[in-house]
Amino acid sequence: MNKTIAQVMTPTPITVTPEMPLKEAIAILAENKISGLPVIDEKGELVGVISESDLMWQETGIEAPPYIMILDSIIYLQNPAKHDQEIQKVLGQTVGDVMSKKPITVSCHESVKKAAQLLHDKQIRRLPVMDEKGLVVGIITQGDIIRAMASD
Image (cartoon, rainbow, N blue to C red; front, side):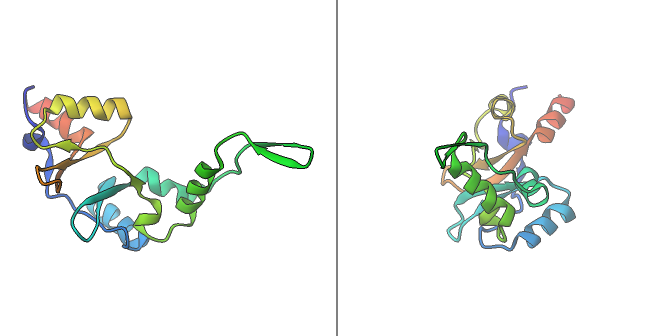
């Protein structure tokens, strides 16, 4: 399969902003039967992705990080900053509170093989597709790649 991402991706994906209330984003995901959305700022630049896995924190909650006490001092066995991020996701009220920041992206001119490799290596389900200007022009998912394979 020698197709480009532009030939396989879903063009002009639904996007949300960091300020959008979380309930609205959840409704968009449910109504459109999709599992994730690119998050763009007021300039149209990609700032994150919100996915079903980001939202699971809302239902599952968090556990206290493991620690030990020595001489009345608490020593965390994991990075406490990670725990703070988890708390923010559980208590989040906006898309910006729970989204994954610094998303991995691909160019619309790259090969589908590269997208498939990234999805596999990073164990993610979707990649925002960017144009030369750095704007989101599409999204490519595992399902898009499987459908392209089936059509060959």
